Structures are given as structure tokens and as C-alpha cells.
Length: 204
Image 1: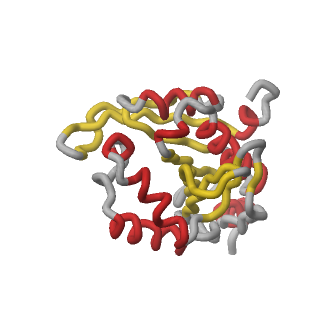
Image 2: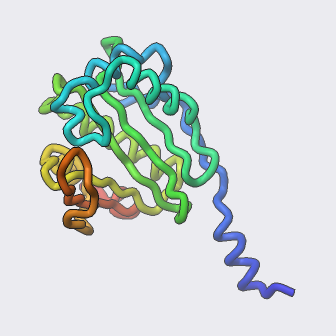
């Protein structure tokens, strides 16, 4: 016979279904919604740029590379179990065309936590658009999905991504030196994170 504490632990370890938001998610300047097959050309336009691919796991994409990646993204249009991920296409409210992506991934081992990732066309760097888009995704993570903690990881050389996460109140919690071999060099990865109560603080 299981004790009441055993039953409590079992219940806590079973993840509840996440509250899926209505799409598109709107900000002052942007729309976020799950990626679609029609986004192929737009997404390839920046994933094929060497400077963009520098800090991504892959080399600059061919159109077929992007098509294969997009197929995987489309297969994940909602988060139904830990380990699932969703890739949001980012568009300007007053102009068609995808200018970047923000990813949310549900932690497989700790279902109250998740990860955020992002990639944007260089044309929108320095405009505040990437920060606005990632902020919207964090709002979904905390207010819809009910996550307790969201973390992001970037190469120590990726200064723009690190600065974006700091602007959103994410704090550097770890620096893993030479932890991964990728594209002919050892990567040092910086881990940033923000907790739900920190996100809700007035100055966030």
C-alpha cells in the first residue's frame, strides 16, 4: 500500500497538459505563430547566411536543408508532453514575411521548466524586434504553460544573444568551458535563466 506522501510525489511527477495559447500571439509590432510550410523561403533567407549559421548547430542551409528542418518544426505545433518543442515564426504586424523564430522546449526531466532559443534575420538586429519577440515567448512560457524556470544557452562568443537574454532579466548561472566540439572548435557555453517570480517583477 502506498502512503499519502507516495501518492503526492506520483501526482507531482505527472505533468499536466499545458494551456495552449491562441495564435497569433500579438505584441506592439509583431505576430508570433507556429511555423508553416509556406515559410520555407523566408526562413531559408536567413538560415542560409553564414553569419547566422555561425552560432547554430548546422552549416548555412540549402533550401532542402531548411525544408527538412521545417518539416520537423511543423510536426510540433503544440506541446503535449515533456520533451516537445514548438517553433514560433515571427512576423511584423504591418508586413508579411517571417523575420525570425523563437523556440520553446518543454524540459523532458523537469516538467515545470523549459528552454528558449531564437534566431533572426540580420536585417532586424539592433531594432529591438528580437527582444520583443523573445519577451512574448517568455510570456507564453510563464502565463500559459505555467513554467517555473526558463533557461537559454549560447556560445560565449555569441555576444548579441547573451545581451538579449540579459535585457530580459535572465541571469548567467553557468559557464561550461570547452564542453562541446562543433564546427572544428570546442565551444564554451553560457547558461542563462529566469524564474517565474523574477519574470513577474515590476522591472522585468
